[in-house]
Image 1 (cartoon, rainbow, N blue to C red):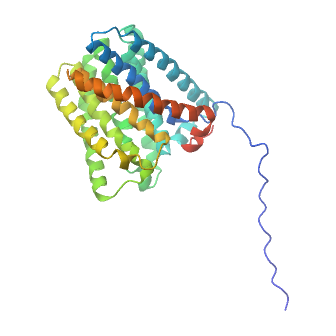
Image 2: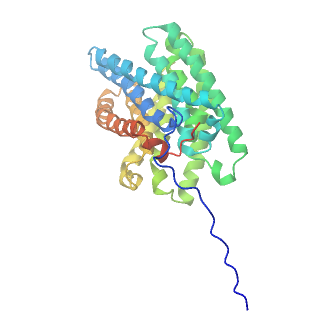
Image 3: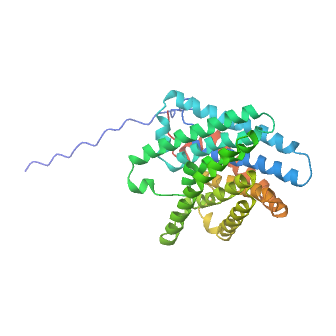
Amino acid sequence: MAERAHPRPKLYPPPEFPPRRPARFARTPPAVFPVILGLIGLGLALRRGLEAAGMGVGLAEVVLGAVAVLWGFAAFAYLAKMARRVSVVLDDLRVLPGRAGLAAGTMGAMALAAAVAPVSVGLAQGLLVAGLVVHGLLMLAVLRVFAGMAPEGRAVTPAFHLTFVGFIVGGLAAPAVGWAGLAVGLLWVTVPVAVAIWGVSAVQLVRRIPPAPLRPLLAIHLAPASLFALVSAGVGREGVALAFVALGGVILLGLVVAARWIGESGFSALWGSFTFPLVSFAAALFAVGVDVAGMVVLTLALGVVPWIAWRVITLWGSGRLAAMTNAAEA
């Protein structure tokens, strides 16, 4: 009997040596933007804290100036990536770190509008309008990507706040540039969306335990409450602001109690989720006059936020952040 012929093994191309390096900026990771947003928020909270202490705000202005340059460079790097292939945006939006990162990037433009409003109303208005428009386009792109994904891929996560509630950051600058009505409108639109996301997330927590690597995202739940308090205080709704600060306090307490469980998987790029909610809550405390508590949270943020930002930005500089967060290549 003739022996049965064995199928030939598949031929694979040999690995490249030396390994191919992507073109400059071709794989800029959106995951760098959450920590940059956190640094912008830190500068804004520091400005409020120094004012509450009766001190000059020069240090806060230096921080905000430096971080504005950092945000500008990151935005330029991502635009350079888009210039190579515009559809790379849709590829980045298919993964959670990409969706969260790009939303944080446009929120950063709105936060910078609040930073520059005391210096240049015209520049602040331009940044605010650009941030809101691009954030709206980004939200539509996310909905388009979701339409083609399996149901489990579009499950509600805390990062939904960034995409669908992130417009509220525009309310920080709106009163300062004479558009208080815009701030009120943003509150009316975004509060119900945040409440819906909080509700769905609460049900999910009861039904199943989130995997350890995704637990840092839970910190994002603090951001909408803090931002609603800030915007409400900015338009003279002190009672509403106090209510949202109280809600934020409850959320922060829960995060502190569960801190060991939330950080069980160790440091990752998703720790950027701790930065902007924490500094937003510190600023909210100053906005409603709870200055002592605001100083405590701000002091904590001054130790935590730069450390997390340094680690994430270092990963970006080494090229590892793109691989860790599955950033698309143009």
